[in-house]
Image (cartoon, rainbow, N blue to C red):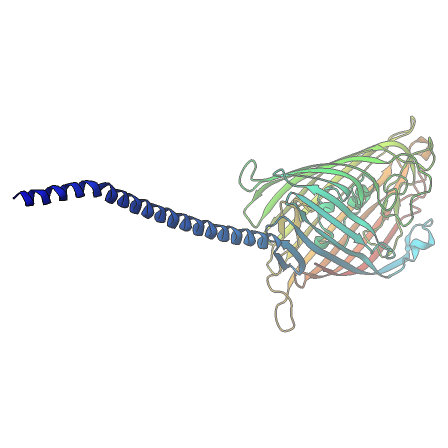
Length: 507
């Protein structure tokens, strides 16, 4: 027993002495396991972080690829390129219009004082417009347009700036642009030359836009507000205001009005300036048919002369809605003036495939001294019936001056040999411009015998496809004009016929 107890006691002592050693070993093993688990967790986190870096890098690469992607399109045959994020856009533009004219004149239908050049107008052909340019957007909120024109009236030109502008469109419904502009002014002049119902715009429109600063290549700045569905569904509100100066190609409406064939004098003083604008309101639309009213107004702020302190002249004159010949049958001559003002109203509507438009304008010249201030006026009414069934397109918004206007129809069946017929329409217009003022009085008392011109034309338009259009037109021109104020002799009366056509390609 004693031996057993001794052995038991020795075992207890050994157990007591070895217990801390076993505990330390277990603790070390637990710490080792924790370290291994932490290392494994760290490795896993590092792998996940690397995966996230790879994914993020891939996403960044995709964003960069999208931003740098180039998207080409050929809508309506117009080459356009766009960055993937939509911040940059550029479109190429081009247009040419080839006009021909045949004049039929009888000397018995002219007054005794008509100049020989007007008795024998030169039939022939011209390139009325030859335009090339680019337009687009940069940094999303800015727009630009650059356009040059090599066509002209009577003879083609060597090329001139037609439009050169930049604008900001970052504020909803508002556009502000500056440079060489074509301001929004009158219904017909706001309509693109590619979408004209007749071959030329009415005489009253081309007369006033040149003198009151609204034609092409006007140096200036313009602001436009446009909003659809502002008051009720289907409406469209447009309000514009522009401040313009000289044309890039000459003095414009100051000393050398209208479509000048010359250049500015070498010595001039001051810049001629004009304030003008247009307001239009589409009353109703069902998505196809539209009804719109509106008006335009302008004020000449300053005139330009060739001699400092010398006379400032205003002159109104116009061709018989034709540009193959440069002869003008109505002409007020130079009027020493201080300024001039204008107002007018417009109406435009399409009811499915029938279109009608009319405008009336009246303007007054503030002449120097106590001499009477003359007033002049003009108007037109026109219609187009698209007998193949297509309808005119109403353009409510644009970043150009072609805004709140009626465009050419979309050709539902483009022409091809043995295929579609294109779109066909019949047109008619009657226009009047009256540049007479108290023509019974001599010039010293304030009389102006600029003449009254009335033109009746009928035409046929063939929209072969989106890009190609042909026009055929007959015009009867009737001019009543005295040789001089106070004469009342009808010495410059004229009546003749014009047969004209146009081939137009545009993209």
